Image (cartoon, rainbow, N blue to C red; front, side, top):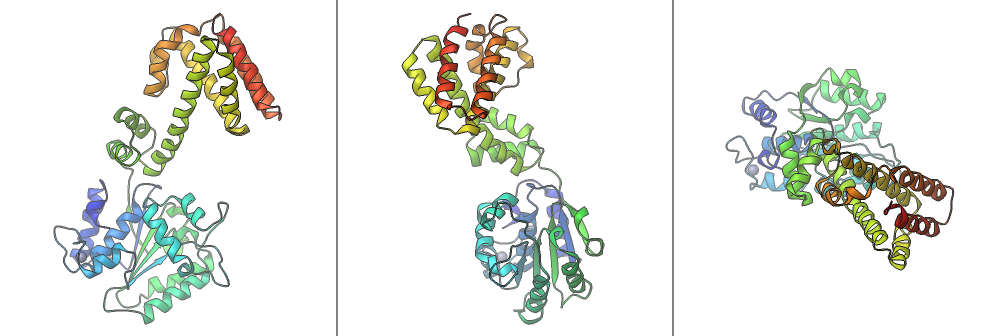
Length: 371
Ligand SMILES: [Zn+2]
């Protein structure tokens, strides 16, 4: 990872580079900030910069043997430490090193949920065990290969007191010129003994423009959609990516909603039966969230009908449909629409047959849409 591979954060980058260039790198550095702002990427870029033999213009070269080792997560004097679950008899990071390398590759913004998936336990509570501090001590003492040794530690807030006390010794009496780079989402949860011995670098939120570009480049969103999603992401790539997942679902729901209204308007009863089967096949939970989505769209269309379009909270695709559809939703049918959708939700939640409930609802829409 080179600094150039990370968007934005110019101040942090030059601060980190200056620490190395002026020989003022602390023994324990704490890089902290909210999830999804690229803290681990900055930590990795710093480690690579420290080891690179061909640095220039405030960045590593990406080509020397040290850089190559870093880029494949195999640098011989860089030790990753991170929260794990018990595996076999031991509790050290190295037990999970191949999952960890996959995680760094697939989720460079370090989505904790993705890490739980790698640990094969979505409800797990991974942490750093005492054994991990002994392991780090062993590595630092016995495995130097002529480089400065670096410990890259993710989520030090997941250290228990016993682990922290052992780790503290390593930070207070460093082995050689070893460096600890700690990366934390929640610095206030780090035990004070450790926290107080670190030099802190805060990484702030990404500007919306960076998030927008990421959404266009990595998720293929259109510019207006990326703009809308970025606005709600609070400067975090992880928040933005999660909303895209929701946006895809929203597209699917919009499509089903449009089908329902078109088929009902055209009185295509047998197609409405297929439509009901399709929605029912989503499963109970998704059928209900789809019906709730329909209710929101109906309300938005009614508001539009009241000629207050600025009140509408819709994606560009939804808004486009609304401009054609709104005239079918009015004060004569909106209440019954919502009542019917509410009743369908209640019935599905009460374990009713979703296919039948949805079909009856669809047939009712044929009449409602003409009121
Ligand atoms: Zn290099």
